Image: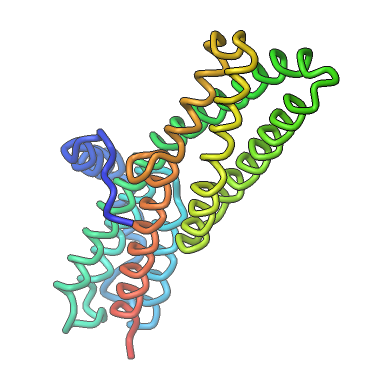
Length: 252
């Protein structure tokens, strides 16, 4: 998959978020850092506190918490007992981790909203299709077969999407996306043929909106699924940065 992009949040907003969060949390930071008494911290204690701060940065969904932990890490990196040979590298890694986490947080929030909007439209579309088609199937084996095939694919697509969005591994997400790309053309063709047989289906705005939402969800590169997978890749890169930083902050 080629690199995806994507989001409309300007970088300046992310940088502004970093500045605002640091300004608001300054008194609390000063108290916390003063309480640590950096001059008395051993290398082992610096490693321990660094690990806790890094884990909180990766786990937190609050921008101010991420920036607060980043500032704690910066002070720990400058402490007398901190590994002296990698201070500059540590500060660069902390800045990268902070900026990456704040950016990821903003992008993921926006994408979650888009995902929920599309899923809702798909569910409403399937409901409209059922209400239009089911009463007209009757004893018509052809229509019944088409509708059951569409319904089966639609339900499977929903299950695969649910699993994909719940998974936290990019490789698994990519495998699910490949399966979706294999199923969706058949579902769309079923809908098209049903529309030829049942004109009311073609005129249903709700049904058409559901089909449009499905196509937007899985559109290559720019679809919601593709961007979700890209974000997971960025998250895994930040995990690697965090692991390297933890190693650099831990005395040997």
